[in-house]
Image (cartoon, rainbow, N blue to C red):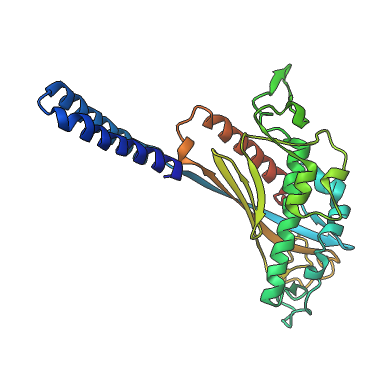
Length: 317
């Protein structure tokens, strides 16, 4: 239970105790007052129990498998889907200058293994220090993509609520500036640059249809210990990454048959690394029974579905 809930309930309990000593104790023969006070205490007890037991946190976790690729020092999201992140397609060169992933893809020597091992041509991250650095930079790379996708496709959290259907086509209306944000939180592109610590690639210097993100009231965005937080009184989103220590030179959609020995047709000068983007969704119990909660759930479902479509590795079927 949150601190504010505990404070209010404690204050109410103290008020009941004070009421009992100042009025009820001095009028014990007034049965109506004693009965009313007893009913009041019982109602408070019932309210406190219902508050503690009925309002529950709802926690969900999503894992999005991602394949990162590196070719000629340009990192990208590798997917054969036509719905792959257009933000990365347009800005991958500039983002690769901001976050240099080449040093992790090129670390180490070829593994000293037999030719039958499919990882024979793989590079590995060799030390804990290198692994920590890789997690930090790969996380930053993906968080740039998350914010970029939101700016380009979901700049306003009310975009789903404002969707209209006309002749089987969908149209959206959304806010683009702080001037018309109302009670919503508006995070400018310049503020997003500072939150992610961007120096080379900057959202503020890239043209887009919006000046920033329109988010739910009292929403805060921060990065702490390689975790991206989007937090407000209703829901907290946590984005984190888990990486594979090995970097392969075999395209994930073209798994090599190690028995036929046909290495040349599968080996590539492009490097690949498997990464899991983990999303922890925490709907807070303090607002669990709010009528507005349904709108927050729709928003979270919409953006997480968009991230999965944009980033998840897909091969041609």
